[in-house]
View 1 (cartoon, rainbow, N blue to C red):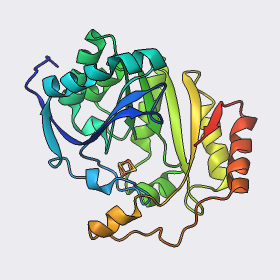
View 2 (view 1 turned 180 degrees about the vertical axis):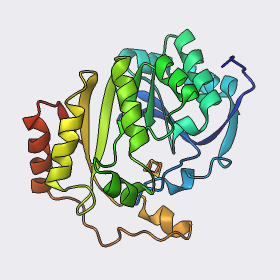
View 3 (view 1 turned 90 degrees about the horizontal axis):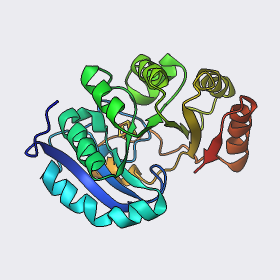
View 4 (view 1 turned 135 degrees about the horizontal axis):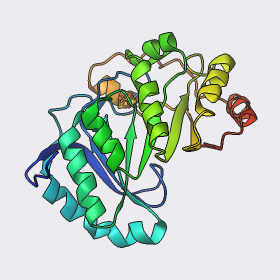
Length: 249
Ligand code: SF4
């Protein structure tokens, strides 16, 4: 992939000083486009790839470098998320390469659903990956996301092969993803990979519900409660049994 400063990205929004998407203070770029349709998605307004603000790599980098001292001081960097950043492969690759030239740490937050040779080039180039695993059972994965689990597991295998630092994210949703056997199975899968540095167990919340309504979409989780403390503690206990490093949001 040659670097071309005119490559244009479709960007949903930017958060210049994020603190939840990777280490330190992050310049977080929410990209348009997602192949999945998660029932609990907070950002359904990112789903369509052609929407949002168009920016060249050069324009985006002009913003990124303004925050370089915050990033450096805090051990942070840039995180490309979405939506699904791997829906805009050329743009994301070029931004990562440009950040590396500037000495800025890079991360992508991805479901791992887009897994092909061009995605591999990005995975090779980026400093770390935040991998969102929605469920450990293919059928339940399909119910939650409308997509297949297999590409994410292949993606994870590749991350293991090249020893890329990974933080796995798992959203705990009552009745959808809190089955003890599913969490146990997840723990068995994840404990095979020494490159996974932490698991972030994220309790489901409904902050994105209003967006579904604004977009005229049916939000199926209106009656689903947020998980209570005990449900979170139980899930953490299962993961900890497998010596995984767990943090909860
Ligand atoms: S992968 Fe992320 S952006 Fe895409 S539908 Fe799921 S939660 Fe939303």
